[in-house]
Length: 193
Image 1 (spheres, one colour):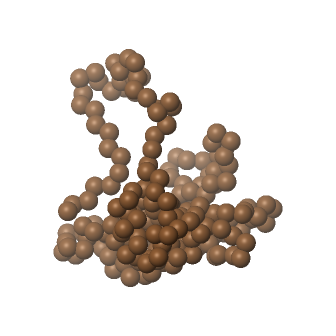
Image 2 (cartoon, helix red, strand yellow):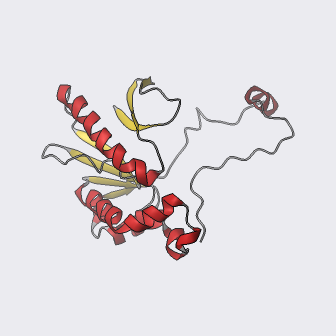
């Protein structure tokens, strides 16, 4: 099972390649939807576990996805870290409050609480996956000792499934993109240094 945030236009439940996906409605910017998501995701997990208890739970940071889930004696946690709280608000630290968007301002205000929650989740995890070696150093500063239970698994792409089209013009036409229009793909987060 996968529990994730439900975005507009998405079905609440879906089977994706044999994996049951439960999408939680939690509107608003990340800082605001996170507490709503935590509560609703924990409720959904409770309902799912009633019939078939899970042996392990896998969360993704920095969105603190497993924050609202209580640790149990039999439960094992794996947290995949894509960035730390410190990394997520690095640009907000040096900026004036007036220049921040609403989400950044609230996140900056709640940083001590969110950072403590991040530390708690890293410490309770049985295993941690970081997407880069540099991130391991960063989370070690957040939760000293976490390095010993951390593995690095870089983000990746299934090159058999996602490969360049043999006929790019046909691909553009199929997507309704003009043959001469610039085409840029960006994956990740933009942060000012």
